[in-house]
Length: 255
Image (cartoon, rainbow, N blue to C red):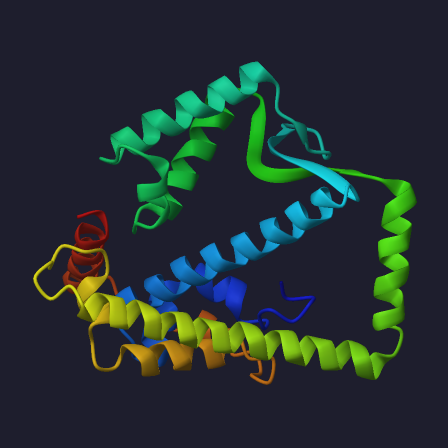
C-alpha cells in the first residue's frame, strides 16, 4: 500500500501505536481505532478485488493459506493440516482465556497485542513453530502475466506518469475515506434510539468528520512528512483512566 501510494510512511507504525498517536494528536483513541478498523477493511477489500479480477482473467489463481516458520529455519512454508490444528487450538485457548468468543472480537480490542504475544509464546513452548501468518498463495499464468506486465509498463514508463498515478490514487483513497466517514455518521444519526451500536457515540460526535480528516492527512496523504520519531519519543504514563478508556471502548465495540 505504501509503495503504490495508498498510504504514507506513518500509517503502518501508527496503527500499532494508537496510544502514542492519541497523545500526539490529542484525539480520542476510539476515533483512531474506528479509523484504522474501517480503513484496513477497505484496503483488504481493494486488494482482494484486484486479485479476484486477475483470477477472473485467468492471469492468476489464488488461495488464502497459513504460512509458518519453524525454529532454526529462515524460510516460511505452508502449514500442514496438523500445524493448522495446533494453531487453531492455541488461538481458541488464548482468546477464551482473555474473555472472548471469536478472534474478530479480539482483533478490534485493546487485547490484540497481548493475544498475539501469548499465542506466539504458547506455540514456541509447545511446538516447533516460531511464528505464523495468513498469506495469499498465488499461481501465475506466465503467458498472460507478461501481457499484463507490458500494459502496466506502457502506463508507468515515465517517472512523471508514475508519480502522477500515485498522486491520483492517493487522492482517491483520501477522498473515499472522508466520504465513507460522512456516510457512517449519517447512518448513525438515523439510530438515535439505539445506543448500543458499535462506535455509535463516536460517530455521532460533532468533531468526528474533522478528526477523520486529520487522521487521513497524517496517515494517508503522501505530502505529509514522517513524524514517527516524535511518536516514538512520547512518554505514555501508566494511569488508571487509560485502562478505563480502553475498557469503555471495548465494551462499546463488543456490545
